[in-house]
Length: 120
Image (cartoon, rainbow, N blue to C red; front, side, top):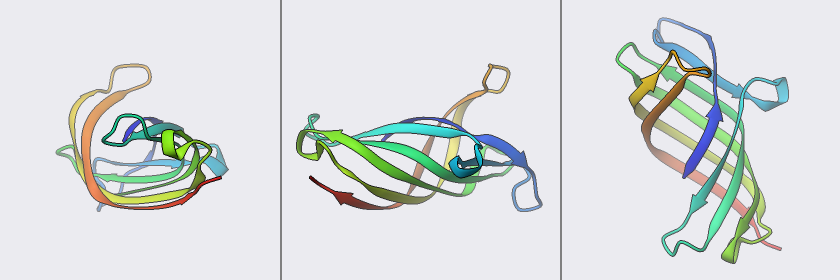
């Protein structure tokens, strides 16, 4: 899945010394959109991120994270799709530019997702 998200640093803790990064659309904190393209290149799901929690250590690892969001459309066999998704993961920042406005990071995440897809 490819996404563009705007996470907000909301604090640090003993468990998350590199920061706690969040999205909470219902409270106006951050946001994001994305597309999941399937192997045939024609089938896609379009998503909106509504909730995210990332816990970062000082080495750039995400030791805990989850995303929750809405499916808001699609292409190919997923045209008109709606529904929800959840994803729990860990990951690592591969490259970051904290001086950029807004700060920009590129990384990899690995985890387990659950998709509830409704087709018209």
